[in-house]
Length: 272
Figure 1: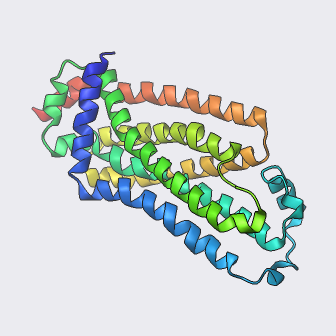
Figure 2: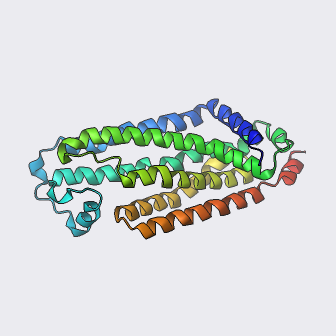
Figure 3: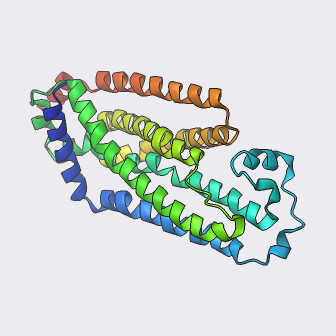
């Protein structure tokens, strides 16, 4: 691997992203929207309700067992505070959809975008190997995705803690669960999303087709995020380690498949 060539390609792709208003709106607008909108629209209305209205609520033994492992003083909290905690974690799951959503925009541009801009021939004629080209495309799409996710997560955590602290008497985020999700699970899911989108971008003939087909992979990945969130709430160490190991293997397999799909000779022939 020639990392100097790889980073040169990454810089080129990132510059191309900045020229697209649609891509910029996804990279900058969505994280800010998720970070600010969700706490104020989901938590603040409940925080303003009279606590007496929640006293008759019964969340069930399942919910109590689930969140008592995430919040140390769960059993001593009132129904209103428990509701806020549950919604906070639920909205946090939605924030963690960004590593899936942003690559659906950025990675769609990576290969087919080069074709539409008539710059693919120069890329294919470069001394870079197929694996170096694919890796550079993965990195250039991964970086905006993970930066946007971190911005959204930090903003969401700060606003959520400000709203919830008076009700639970402690800082809810960041905790071990949120740190694992943000710094381990989200990057891995983002890479998988990027690899799948690059595979699609390699096969289609227009960016619009890449967007449409890319939307089909979002739902399975969303289900994966939700499943991992519940696994962490149950604090099953074995399940967590197994899940991370499976994701690591999947990343490696998808990289190999993506590299094989990216056929330089066939692409050059099509452009002649």
